[in-house]
Length: 315
Image 1: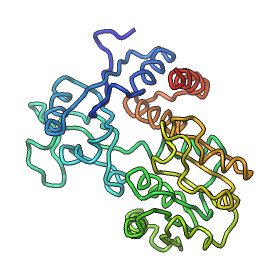
Image 2 (image 1 turned 180 degrees about the vertical axis):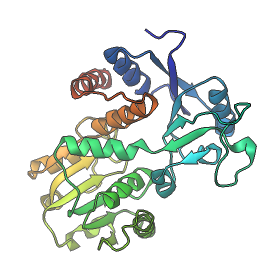
Image 3 (image 1 turned 90 degrees about the vertical axis):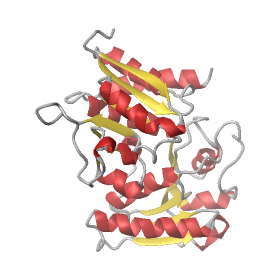
């Protein structure tokens, strides 16, 4: 049970009533005996800066950020990590220590005006969530030929991870070839930012219906679109079952349903699969650990949280 000294965190977005994050965080806190509480905070589009200032003034240790504010929060942050700068989206804020004799908020190194330097550092734990989810299924990225399906915000987080972890090649499959090409160009910039410009990473963009031009037959595929999400559970981004014979490992970031049509196709073709619920859980775990230094959420607690969330999703 939270006390008057509790660490207080929450999630901002619009809407947030559907979010599973309060359930997840408060169950983890209960399991670990943390003096910690996590609350949902609906925030309108024009009130993001006020919300962050208010959270700081109220002593919030941190915030998660969900749609549609993952980009809007960035101008109001004092600092951001490399992932946020490369991806252009932030989902976790961590309170920075107060500085100065009067407890003034830390100022942004980018030269932002004082009233925009709010005292939080921004992170993107979607990257760490995806990494931990894949690691739990023994899916390695280094040296792999990879397929990235989609070119939106979620795909950018996956793209950052693929570059960071040393993929040999990445083919972006997207219905808009221009957007796919733009993402491959951004991945080159990510590689430069991470001092990996000379790593030999091969990049290409391809329309989904041109998948038969792929030369390999053992790809690691990450599905980053909303195709197949409830209620459209009978859809997959590529419907030809022969495509899935080119995949040996498949990840879908969609978590409703827990097994998407994309995953069913891949599993039927003999692939190891990983669903989006694990990514959701681990991005939350990563945020909680940032807010509670020294805390590491053990695997048995992760399993317990997964069971609780699966039950909630099936209600």
